[in-house]
Image (cartoon, rainbow, N blue to C red; front, side):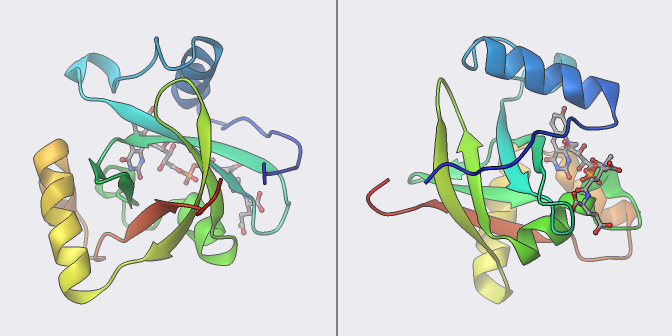
Length: 149
Ligand code: F42
């Protein structure tokens, strides 16, 4: 089932621009983080309070068709707002290429988190530095396709 709700673009201009470039080109443009050359995906989630659709570019950390979503926010002291939205509303769409795919997310813990954290740092080494910069443990969600969709 596709998510429903009004799209509320990010207040950050560079994030809005990235989403717009990615979506309007089916993932052919706006598909890397600035000049790093490293790939991103676009996650659509539902605002926990507003019910509005939020679109968040995140680094692409994929393994066997599942994706880690790393709530790093560049090592900021607080979690990104989308973290709380995903805890409250775990149904998302994730776009990695031409089309968004319905997925559900869950927060990882223990060994499972450690395994996916390793994959995340391999895909985007800056995550390791972000973890050093902040006192919080950076949350890692796992997004998996909804069976049959
Ligand atoms: N951020 C990451 O955390 N990890 C990444 O791997 C990552 C990669 C990345 C790659 C490219 C790129 O362009 C951006 C990238 N970012 C990455 C940044 C990411 O896209 C987000 O911008 C960042 O994580 C901050 O997320 P945020 O949700 O805190 O964004 C703020 C600026 C935001 O959107 N605020 C909204 C607002 O209007 O202020 C929040 C709106 C919202 O969700 N409201 C909720 C609602 O119900 O609608 C209610 C909120 C409440 O208070 O309950």
